[in-house]
Amino acid sequence: MKTLMILQSTVKTTVSSEYFPAAAVLAGVVLFWGIGLLGGLSLLSNHQTLLTTLSWLLFVYVAAVLTPLAGLVAVVDLSRRLLRNRASGDAGSAGTASA
Image 1 (tube, one colour):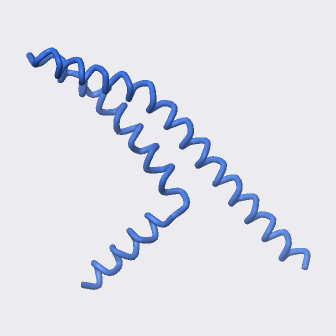
Image 2: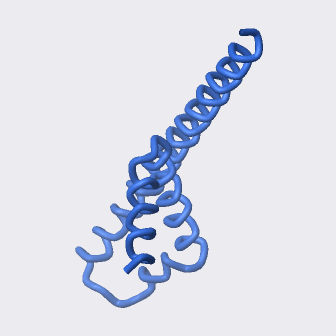
């Protein structure tokens, strides 16, 4: 029971973190491209109907175009938040040191 409470607290803290949305998007992008590099596109070699194959190709095309853009936005957002928090932490410690 205690382990469940600790796990629940950890998950709640992680999900409510300001870094979570951008980190989740970045993890999704990396997962998509990792699966693609490891052979996820081999689904196209199966004999399927033309509509199924075209739908899959359209999905992969859209994902291949949008995931790098989403990854770039996530990296920029994460770095901006890290730099902002680091700067406010440095300013806070400098302000207490001079007081």
